[in-house]
Image (cartoon, rainbow, N blue to C red; front, side, top):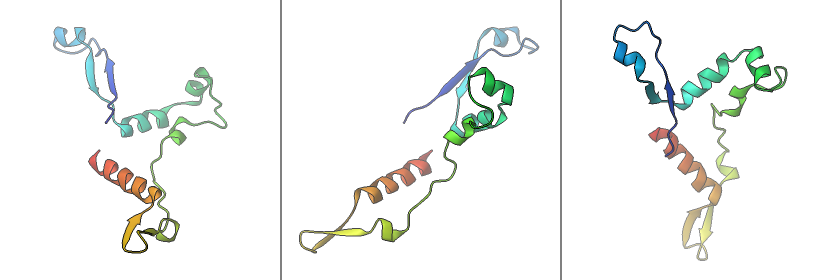
Length: 103
């Protein structure tokens, strides 16, 4: 799984001078990215060349995964009806659910 890390310098007002010299490194989770995108102002969007009327970066992140009902992804028969299997969309849906549960 891919991991995104952020690195930034701590403010100078920390008690320990050595901490302010070394940059802070931490994992940047999807929820952190979503929160950062939600906090962007219209002037931030204009600075990035995005329209503040039609484009919001938080729209690029799925927060709810639409799940199709079983009739859309039914089981299929294999070997003349002896065995049942799932179609590709059902397999991918299961993989997404497992990956989401692990993160």
